Length: 178
Image (cartoon, rainbow, N blue to C red; front, side, top):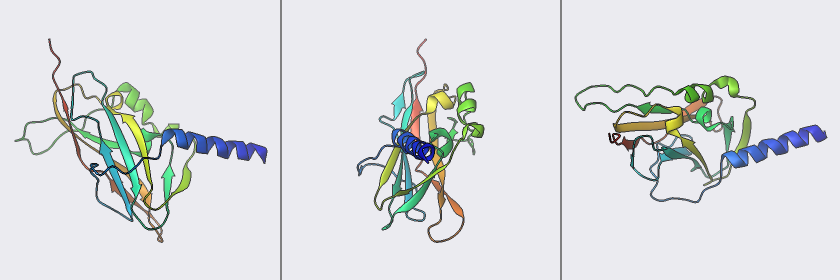
């Protein structure tokens, strides 16, 4: 019994360190609402110098009137997989995805999942996680990147899951000076 209590306490401590509660930010852009949940990705500035760390904040919000369950693996790069689109000329009809870095391949390896935690997020509650994109995705080419993140959510009152997607974040990476 004591072993289980310690395990549960350790899990909640890890979850607390991984996701911190945030206050409402009226300037935050959100993706579409699904099942009373919204997802947002933002950064502190729109432009970064080459080789500068690109940190983003991902916020998961319960916009419903009742508590909703969140499922987390406690690993941001696995909980919120990103689609990072490379810069390209405007006349090209599609954009390629940024490749994973060596560290990104290790950090997004689903074999790292040791446990899955399900916990309630209160009505109007938010959880925010930080992620350094430049360590996971190769963003060394100058230009404008488009980044979205997504996560699976449980359907309220029905079986099954749905994919929740964030807003599209534009990030400019400036060319390195010779």
